[in-house]
Image 1: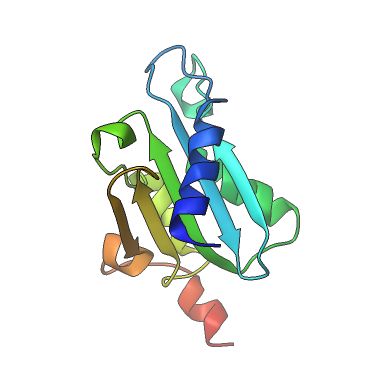
Image 2: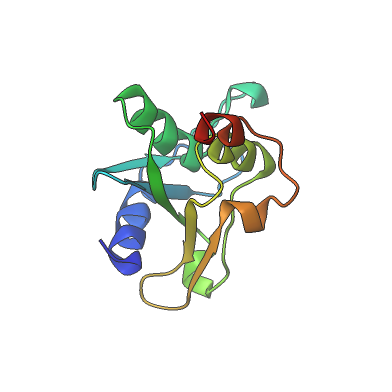
Amino acid sequence: MNNIELLKIAEEARKNAYVPYSKFRVGAALLTKSGKVYSGCNIECASIGGTNCGERTALFKAISEGEKEIDAIAISSDNSEKDEPTYPCGICRQVIIEFGKDIRIITGWSQGKIYETTMKDLLPNYFSGCDFIENK
């Protein structure tokens, strides 16, 4: 699956966002190394701690189905169509890097600019169990 196809899935997932407070929709599409795709959107709650980002929603769906080898996560937000990239928040970065420092992060718009980086570039000097798990 290429970056444009993955971004299109993220763009579709964004439509399901529940954002009565921020009004800022985010969709994510996660590609596993086995080729499966899991999508997610942000879901807000009046108690801010109960809010979940689109990236973690997709990741938690994949992990709960037994997928732990992640290749890439595509992110689409309401800024995407303005060719403004949206990257994972700090909490999402910490959760994502738990499953690999080389996970590709793709953002942008399927009809415009596309940006690609890796988790280790987004979270330099990270602390994660991924180093311990990978070295076993």
